[in-house]
Amino acid sequence: MTIQLKRWIYPTSLLLVILLGGCAKTNTLPDFGPLRMEVEALYLNYHELKVVDSDLHAAARRHIEESGQQLSEIQSAARFITQANLIAYYQWELLSITEYVRDSARSDFFTLRAQDVADARQKSEDLILAIKVYDAFIRDPQALALIEKGIARIQQNIAIYDALYELMAPLANRPAPPPAGGVQTSL
Image (tube, rainbow, N blue to C red; front, side, top):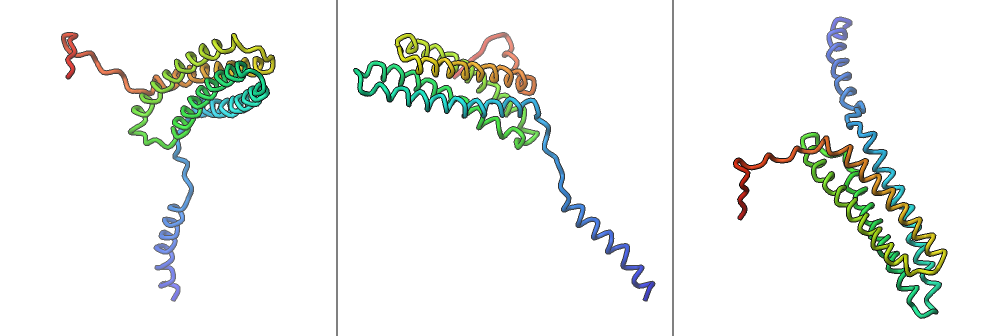
């Protein structure tokens, strides 16, 4: 009886170890610490800029009873702040999945995202210029303070875009070499 028991202990314990080993948690996610920190900062800025936008719309509503010119100017500035905030949200949404992109597709992912971040930076700078056009015609001190706060947040987003680009550019695909002879044909 003990001989038969000993004969089954080894295979049974081996099977148990294999089964339990398959259930063990593994942490195979890559470490994107610096990228994660910038992406989280972008998300926090998105929420703070959303509050500024909401407060700016509330400031605009105080001018409904007047001729409407101040209301129009404040709402136009708020619209550009909203656009800059949507750009930030879009970038956060795309970059927050970085950890889940397959290793084989990461260089393609970073190539596309680096270009997106560069575009987001340029669009945000353009929106700041548009906001400043309307800023010149606004006389409400509270609205002006909110607009300045919004511009500061957008500038923080631009700094985050620059940092993200610097982190992603080395991981992106290299540009294609120029065609032989320097002549490029297209259809």
